Image (cartoon, rainbow, N blue to C red; front, top):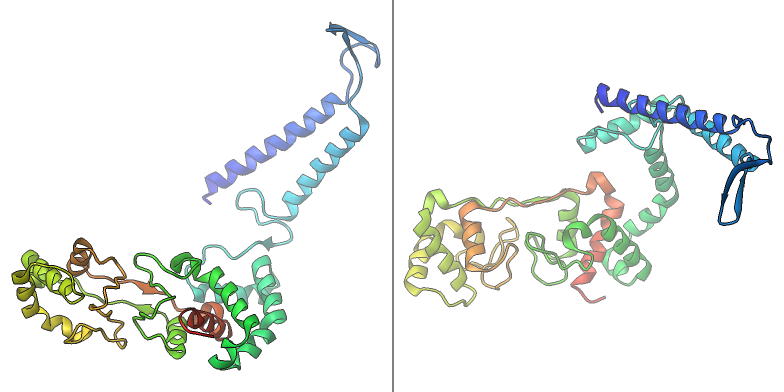
Length: 317
């Protein structure tokens, strides 16, 4: 927050608090010149207004809450950039990377700062760390028979992976379906765990400069023909002649290569859509999807459990 807006918040908050206390004080005084309990001279529908003071319990309650509000704003951050006397904050701000987060956390503990998020994560790791370690020592066969382990893996998946792959793990355009047998980098447990630990970065280049518009149309026709689609035969034939540059990743038969994460073009399963327009767009502009690495975020023990859950989605227990 800039200095201007910080001062703006502080001034507005201070004015509001002063107004609240002034209102409480003035309403506790009798400025009417009429004795308490006497008529104010107003009557409506048979109801006469009397000069009665505010209820004591109500007044005391508001004074207490007002004083507490002032103390809270002094002790904790609540007005602009003011950090509070206690030095408490909910989390480390302006973090741009995992490395920055770790550095800020270590610095906070070293300096005795009260960062609520870091404190709660530390307590959680101390409490549940041994549990995750015990599951991390089990192989996939044992985990597949352990319902509790898979339930924990599912919760970890929902917290960290469902934003992209969906709560049902069926994915969306650009995000793989994790419940079928189609895997870009391999569907064995070891492959899945490696993907989660280290992440993946796609490297499908754009071909518009190499092929031109007509070449893209021809290549699109040929790619669609590999999965049995009805296409212009002459255009597909022209595309086949150029497919050699694609075979380096997708294979001469177009069935892909898990070493590169190159998809199978013959099964009619499409990550970015299998329409003529979608395939042409992929060929024209390329694709550079990124699967983040979770090793430094969740740790190997939790990744082990998530990997087991993901593996169970497309394999019998």
